[in-house]
Image (cartoon, rainbow, N blue to C red; front, side, top):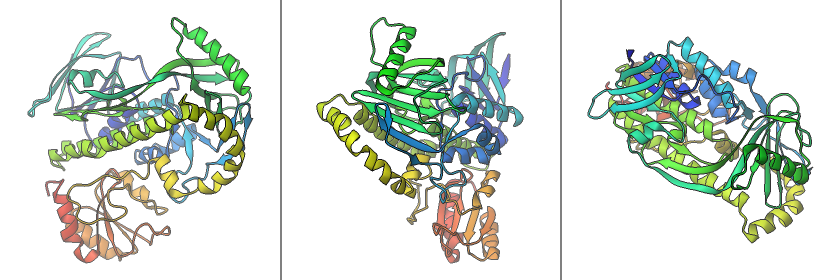
Length: 500
């Protein structure tokens, strides 16, 4: 079998499928290959942040996502068998995003939703097709892929390839891209526990006791929780023995028990970032580009944003609406995000799990003492937009090239004003005005060759009434200017990345 496409995506996890769905939505011919039999059955990654739901909304998938997701209504921190109280989080971000809060939607469900979308949009997914060879992709040459499938060898050829094949990426290794970073000395466990007891239902349970740590995420019906914690490595111990030991620890330290697990695994956390995210016609997204600890439920969400960012750029290049040089901005924008995320999660996880005397003293003496008081204070502090912005990944900011002015929204995802995100479903360049005369917005947009989007004043005050905003297809603000100078200022911003 020989096949041609505009883009080959290696890896049908959330990142690869998001890239394929966005590219297909933009009219590109996409083939996805993966050695698995189908979408992942294990839940694996499970936290879904607001910005990721916004990406799903752009694809028209938000209703299904929200119908299948569980909203985490509170965090329940505690020590040992006792919870200190509740920190409400269901309303976090109610002025920041149309999808406030933190959602639980495991990786397997994300994959099924995106698989259906790729098929509906005309993309092709070849399951049980494992990459065996990757050639080309330099100096304008197409990429040639050889994969072993159930019916024999398959040869695929395309101008572009996206490596979304996980932390052990065959694509990254084939291109000789270093994966720089460290590996944690501690081992951890993850279990999908059924009929669990000893936990507060409807929220995220966070407990510590001595050197032990337990996190529990609600997975839908009462009693179904994802449990995570430390599982010290013991040589030659089987997975069944590890699970039995973990069960004893959970019962003795935290009073948590469960009848069975639908999935149990142990692992070590890695903190690594690929030395480059682009190599000629080959790009890396998701775990193939960066891995880190699960603190803050950021991993899958970061991969989804990698894929969305790249697909919006690549789709424009394939359609002939943008210069190929735009693709250099993918690495420029997304690698710093990955580096910052790896640094912060590494530092936070190291502090939480440290075995040093001072860290032990804080965990065993200070936390039980101040925990109940902190829980009463945190609900007021946690409503701050800044804290939620970092958690939800709505505060990410790109350093845009050629931007002479500095505005607080420049390089950020378009702030939500209550009704303005619906227009982003068009995946087009747009000119937004908030309180600016609609006729002025339409005239400026027509001159610039973009879609006009006049709106009433922003009730949250983040978008000024004396400015217009140039918004990219991925929803990020590419330029800000006063209407009187907008044609010159924003036309320059457009010409830097499009062949107008």
